[in-house]
Image 1 (spheres, rainbow, N blue to C red):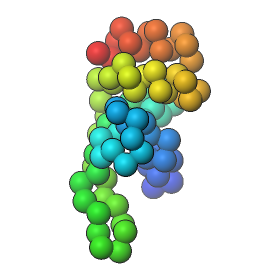
Image 2 (cartoon, one colour; image 1 turned 90 degrees about the vertical axis):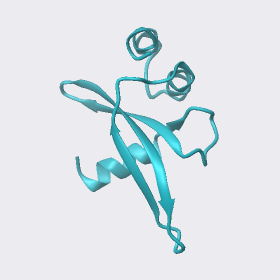
Image 3 (cartoon, helix red, strand yellow; image 1 turned 45 degrees about the vertical axis):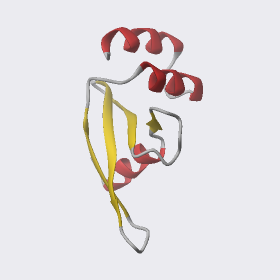
Image 4 (cartoon, rainbow, N blue to C red; image 1 turned 90 degrees about the horizontal axis):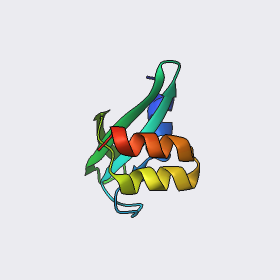
Amino acid sequence: MTLREREELLRQSVSEDGRPEAPRRYAIRRTPAGPEFYECKLTRQAPDGTVVVHGHPTKRIPPSVLRRMRDSGLITKAEYRQFVKELN
C-alpha cells in the first residue's frame, strides 16, 4: 500500500462513536480480490501537530460503523447487510 493510499484510508475512515477526533477508526479498501477492512488508532500527536497512527487489517467492524459507511456511500445497502452478518 502506498503512502497516498494509507492517507486516503485515514481520511475516509469512520469512528465508532461518530466523533471526528475519536482515536479508534475503521476504513474499507476496495481491491480486485474484494473489500479489505482496517482498524486504526491514533497513537500520539507530536507538538508540531504531526499525528502518528497505527493501523492493521481487521475482520471485526461494529454495526454502528457499518451504518455510517452505508449512509456515507462507502458501502452499499446490500454490502451493509452482508457485512453486519460477517464482521461481528
